[in-house]
Length: 167
Image 1 (cartoon, rainbow, N blue to C red):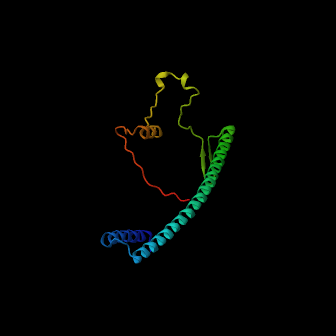
Image 2 (image 1 turned 180 degrees about the vertical axis):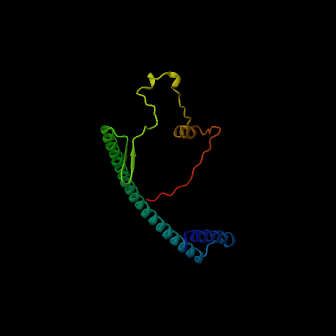
Image 3 (image 1 turned 60 degrees about the horizontal axis):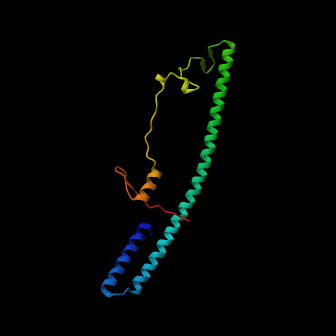
C-alpha cells in the first residue's frame, strides 16, 4: 500500500473514531485495532522512505565527489591545452612565422580583440570610472527585527514552510 493511501486510511479511521465518540460515547476495539494497524503500517512506510532518502543522500555525496574529480580533470586538460597553445605561439614567434599549413590543420597567429586592464582604479581619469550600486535586503537582520517587534514592513511577506528532519 502506498504512503498516501495509508494516510487516507488513517484519516478515515480518525474520522470514524470521532463519529463513534459522538454517537456512542466510546470507541470500539475493532476501530482501535484498525487504527493501530494503520499507524504501524504508516510508521513502517515512513521509515522506509527515510531509508531511501538516506541512500540517496549517500549517492549524492558520491556524485559530488565524482563531480569534483571531473572538474579537476577538466581544469587539468584545459591547462594542458593552454600550455600547448602557448608553446606553439612562442615557437612561431621566435621563428618569425605567422602561419603554418600542416597535413590536417592550418595554424595562424592573429591579433586578439583589445581589452582594458588597469592596476589602480584611483589613478584612472574619474570620467571613465562608473559606480555600480546593488540593492539588497539584509534578510537575516530583517527577520530578527520582525521577530523582536512583530512589525512586518510594507512589501515584505513572511513564509514558513515545513521540512522533514531525519535523525
